[in-house]
Length: 297
Ligand code: GUN
Image 1 (tube, helix red, strand yellow):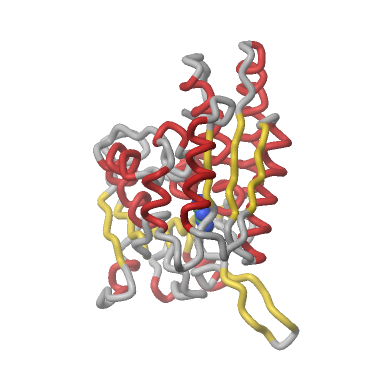
Image 2 (tube, rainbow, N blue to C red; image 1 turned 90 degrees about the vertical axis):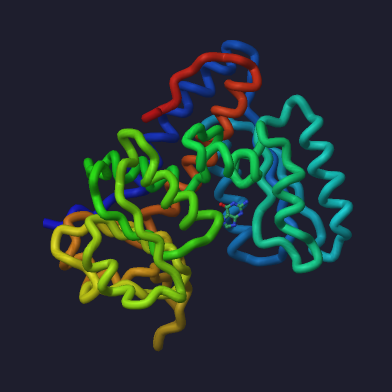
């Protein structure tokens, strides 16, 4: 029987535990606060941001919801980030990507105070992750680690193939899997759009993480029996009856090979959001020097 990994359920568990953490912080006079900045008109981004706010409300995290006209000058965005950096009530800052083309994404990420960078994208936090001393793990790979742990998937000694080399998912995922610790110790291969013989590599894997942003690029013929498949993709494709959401994995054929697989939707997506809350609570606790135990840490 294939284990269909229920990301909604695991994320709900984490949110429930975070309510306790937020209440402990509240007893010490601290209310974790997340500020989001949205500078695009993309409906998907708007939906993601409003879902993040809904999640925060559920666990008792306060939010600031800042929207900036996509035609605004880059300097206006920097001013907003400066204000949030200086605001002692704000623990976490998330600037939703993508940003308009006239804004340099790397400059913006560098501008966020590393202690408030709950995305884990600031170069200092990236460096700490690579060096094996993470402050904030990026939310999607962190959530995948929790899903693998919950499904009792052993990473120690496993051959893991990460398909995709983005800064948000592929690179940090590969780094986390290779770390010298209980949730790492895997032998990691990173594949991407220029990889030759992708199927040979995925067939040799015990764990495949598909994060290339290409609809259904990994199918069952590219997998060996007993593999664990994690699908990070969320792609809307046109069908005869309208449109539908698919992942980077062709689910039906992959599920026949897999011992465990994440569905789309309901797999990785809810975990990404749960780990943003996790990082925000961690930021608040560390800023206030309050010792709390975060769920599954
Ligand atoms: N856009 C898509 N995913 C993300 C994410 O994880 N963080 C931010 N800031 N923007 C995104």
